Length: 140
Image (cartoon, rainbow, N blue to C red):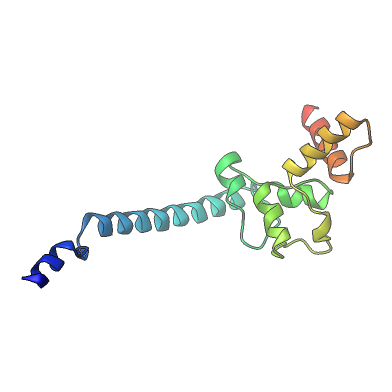
């Protein structure tokens, strides 16, 4: 009798076809499908000449938000890169030869530098000046 009572309090073991197991399988399948679609998108953008990433594994940020990537081109000109590429450089996954990883900054870092410089009246640091040049070029 005691074991019958304890058995009622025990957590049920989910069966292989439980809703929780099916949900995890669906999530895993969805992630795998999205990753494959993203790789296909990057390949298509690269083939179209709209994707020039600067890290070993192409960033997903630019592909999904701007349908292209110019981080490689911008970096070669001393300009900032997207947040994902900047993180890749910080993790040692940069793919542009001759670039000092310590000098790679993101657009967010550059924006902060510009705002800080504007607030303090001090000159912008290197990446802030690069963003300013890039904005001027885009306005032409």
